[in-house]
Image: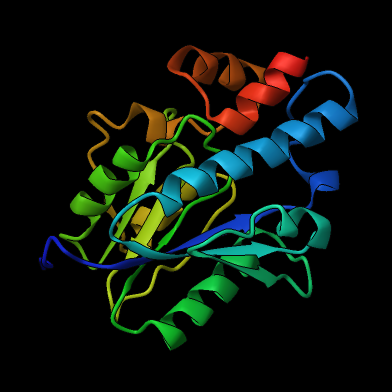
Length: 212
């Protein structure tokens, strides 16, 4: 199944509360780790909202103070009433998006892609528009950095251990990641962070790293 290249999208970005975010990231004090997690989210959202065919970025966040930092034109922030994990937050966003923007595709993007750029998202969505549902693997081929669904075929989130395999088993088509290095570099560990620093990170992450 194909779709016009001008497919419009709603991007759902679930954001964890800082107190529980990036627990595997050995990056100094807990305060520094939390600052990095917030910066990763800010840079991810900034990149996505700059994509011309993303008509809305929907941020799902149960941390109200953090959520207020994401308010911007083209961004809607929804409270996560019962923090129940990434899949529950993503599903809440998908349901909201499909009920209010039924003619748009939906892409779920986890908020830990600090090297992401708008052209990376644009290229991935161009590929995704060819399939009812699709998934982009992380660099290790284990996790998922984008999960998409066209109108009438909303994404079905299966985030967690081996999520990419779970999404493929559930019918999503795997996307070719050629030229999408920034889009597959999520950050869970200090090694991941070192890798994205070589690629170049967004402004918010750069400020936190510079502050040390």
